[in-house]
Image (cartoon, rainbow, N blue to C red):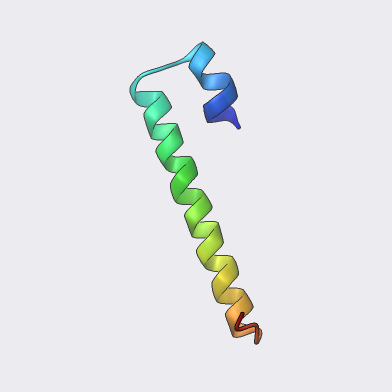
Length: 45
């Protein structure tokens, strides 16, 4: 939310790109952890 709504009006360039990349990496990490935990608990869907 911060990357797409707030930063374009306040900052730009490399900082904006780095924050966007960090948000994508964090979302993928959370997705992988949730899938791993669900699989270990017995969900195989």
